[in-house]
Length: 279
Ligand SMILES: O=C(O)CCC(=O)C(=O)O
Image (cartoon, rainbow, N blue to C red; front, side, top):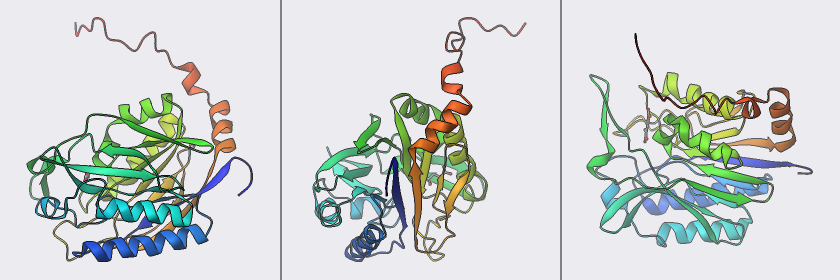
């Protein structure tokens, strides 16, 4: 693709109980996405393992390991940047929810450990405590591909606007969140959060979910999507296994920033509470 545009592919993978099968399926789809012109391909959160506290310790592996070896090979063979969703990573006697990124030579160029753990309690609907098995990462993660700096977050990280704001300030024009929202929070929050992050920061935002499996203990919402810097959803799928494509157009992004120059108009001189009285 000519100019300052590149094609992004999101793989809404059906993830099951066999790690080997999950990885093979991912590899097949990565090849298909590259054949269709994708320069950057992303997989979902927990792409080698079902999502759930009982699965994380069982599927956890070190990095490098079986899964990241396959990701590296796949990125190299297909000459793409690969944002390899996330996997449960075993390190320092802990388990992290970790996203690795490989360049078109198969070199790992980024590793993001989920920063904000998904600990919530919505009585009668969903209770989840990732912190029962997982530890959180402690650093923000960006990487540079030709044309564009990319920021990374994982699922619940999407709810924290400061992260996206810092990435935009650091020069990221695309933020990618492998994620797996659920049937309670997905319907209202998934799209809303992405559009908010995209519009506030005038960046492209992409989210990649696993496909929905109605028989799973945690049922993912699906609906992987890409939102442009105007806040518009430019590509979306439903809940089934699919590959989703979108063109990231950096000239368009710049034109949005010129038309509504909020980043230059910020009143940072006022955004510090020095004294707040309720009288
Ligand atoms: O924030 C949500 O509603 C879902 C988050 C989630 O599923 C996760 O972080 O894995």
